[in-house]
Amino acid sequence: MRDLFEVVPHNLFSLLASRQRAVYFRALMVLWNCYQREIRFRRGDLVTYLISEMERDLAGWSDDSEALDDPFADGDVRETESGRADTVQREAFSLPHANARVPWVDGGSSNAGLPDAGAAGEGLTESGGLDADMPDAGTLSGKAHALIRRLVATGWLQAIPDETGFDETLIVPRYASVLLDALYRIVHPAEQRYNAIVYSVYSNLRTANEERDEFMLQALQSAHDHTIALRESLRALLHNIHTYYQNLHLRQEIRELLAEHFDSYQVAVAIAMYHPLKTFDSVYRFRPRVLQILRDWLASPSLLQQMAASLLGQRPDLTPEDARAEVVQRIQFIADTFESLDDLLQEIDRRNAHYSRASVDRLQYLLNTDRDVKGKLVQLLRALPPLTADVHHPLLEAMRELPLFQVRYADPDALYREPRRRQRGRPQPLRRPAGADDAAFAAEARELVERANAIFSPQRIAAFIREQMGDRARLPASALRLRELDDFLRTMVAVVRSDEPEMPYEIDWTDADGGEDKPDLVRVGDYGVPQITFVRKEG
Image (cartoon, rainbow, N blue to C red; front, side, top):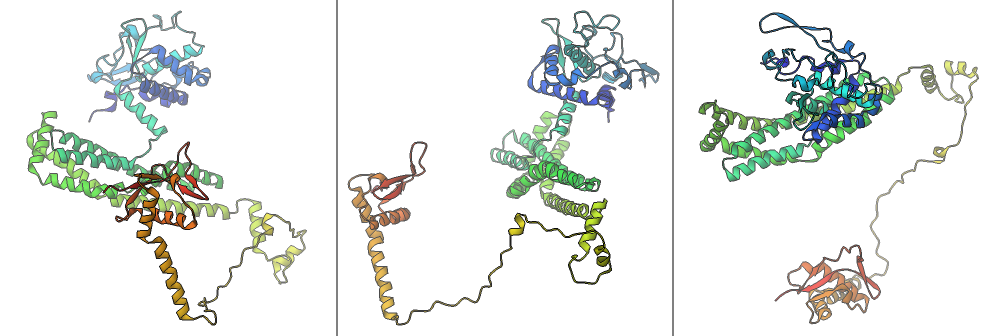
């Protein structure tokens, strides 16, 4: 394993360990923002970003004492490849001189990782001071330039001369880009899209399984990467809940506990991460399909050989056996991860439930704990019977000699009385009126049914709509002729029966919802009818 400081400068993290680390961190975030927006940027561009976003920080920032913060300012004794102890002199804000040998680049023996000495020293005199053409060190521009030199000196930036002018183009090394992204994600956690990750795994595998072309290995690699992201996201959620659980005992005030629970946990964990995980079923929906595709691939030697051949094209150093083993390992990893998701999800549910119960218990403890004289008095008064109670209690007798008085006052709650629930008795069946004839009642009911069938039977409804439509193929609601209440009722029944196959019409609902300039209902005589259209069926 390579040593970290064979890749990154030895003083890369000195900015975050200095007394003004907050200013340097904001400068790194400004650098990240500039790096994300600009394809390439010069020193002047970054100066503009710094002044725009850190004007107040730059106004109060001074570089006079930064040499005291640099642990390598007075020399860092390091051992070179030859075994000799060399002292690496570092200045607080000046770049290395042209003859300096920087041991952290290319195995510790070259200056390949640094900008050219002429470019790096632009604006500096031979003595290391500022040129007359450079901005005054006390101005915002001068401080921004000094801050950039500090970033260059510590390895967060590299300066290369511009071919078209005297300005410098700033380069963010790869290691610095990775660290800047990590720092930004720590401060601004990304929204966890578990369902999108699961669907991406399924979509990649399904497409590859259907097409079975030369891109199957790329689909497997993408599914493998998304599976790792899913596992790490769920583990991060689990550990995050546990962190909040462990911090409960540190909250000594009710206000702190409530603020952490509602402003931090509910927003950053429950709503952003836990709730989406529990309200979508993508894991259980796509997992059987993912596992079935992977099992089919493992059972097909020709597919494994095809993907192994593609892997050999990417990595010629592998043997055919090693390539096939790596393909099988990736397939098995995805399958094992999806099969073990149940245990991980159950553990997340258990930790979340434990935290919720523990936070409630902690809140009750803080509410009931007597931490001051007022709390003790309240607890004492609550333990005593009312002063007017006719009981013999030694404490109550002693309290009656004290100047204590019972005070009553009216407030909105005093006018409220809890409603009393009515005791419902046993329900009794309806009694038929005296003198009612069963035969007459049955005859009236039969007559009512026959009348309803005569008016609203399917044949009558179909005839009613045919009469309304005449020779037209389409009948809008505004053209209906509703002369009486029965016509309106027939129209309602016609809408209900429109889906029946024996009806000679169907309904077009295009205009039923209205619009910006169309009402939902149309007036037909005394009745309101939806904006529908009766359409005659062909044939």
